[in-house]
Image (cartoon, rainbow, N blue to C red):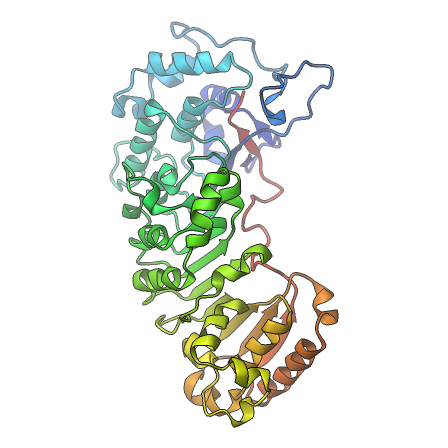
Length: 464
């Protein structure tokens, strides 16, 4: 998918675009957004389907494309583009052999063309948003080419006239295969201007394997990381953040979805081992001195993952301004402070303990969002968090201006009378100290367009 300034066509195969660039090189300079993913063409129901392949693989060949590619000895513009490629030369790859593999892949309608996609990446000097989705699994030659692309993009005095991918600021990858992990996309995070990384359905469990190319050496330019439907253990998140001195925003949505798609063995082995307290401590250890926004959320099925019997805290973050947490994050703190009976008997007014919000939230936070299920336990958690807000607001939380309670939908209002009454009581108490408390209805704080390219962009697919 490509967004250009002059061209109206939206859907290109990698070879179709490579051929177009070979004939008219200026085309490449107008491409600003590129999405590499499976095509979504309508399938002719009269064509036979291969039952052994996923439905999306059973795609007809584009009738506008030639049935075969020219031989390497052909003197046309396509082969000339490969022959004079400085990237193939610097990677030590024989252009004829590289081209022969693409020619072979081209004959397989259902085959994802890794080499063609990698070569296309050598031709995109002005792309600012790069998206990889599904089946990106480069083999040895494609990896060598990518290493050269990144290496040249980082050289301010490169001998190349135009450094491909040097302008990329946003990198998005949707992980899909059973052995996906961040090591496969680490090089993209090493591009000199990549300040935003968005990963979806990523499972990264550091103890699973020893990576050949540890991704923790990448990411020095990153300012924003969004991990949605992800499963990271504390060692993996620490490794990812170890070299991110500019990171300001981290969103992490904890999910077992990625594990489920990788088979029951992963789910059974790792689902119960996740430790929210250690996870937060790992984030704090790496970026706690400069992170400004932290969002931790989860699906309804995994809310218990955020209950730690010893309690947990984010007080160690020094510059945090926006904080999003599941309300269940406080349950362990209530147990540790032995407030269960006090809350249950509604005797917090006589309790000398400070509200738990003092233990959980840094004094620098101006906006606090709590993800709630609107059940009875959540009512108790709200009481324990804010029971004496007026007394500590000025000294403990001087920056706090807004508190949002997030729900899956508007049905919260009918669930629990006690919860509803507690919410309105807290609204009045917060208003008295100049804090806005408001109910919202989004389960994950995701901005529109964060995960997928704009509608007005154009797609380059990894097929024909």
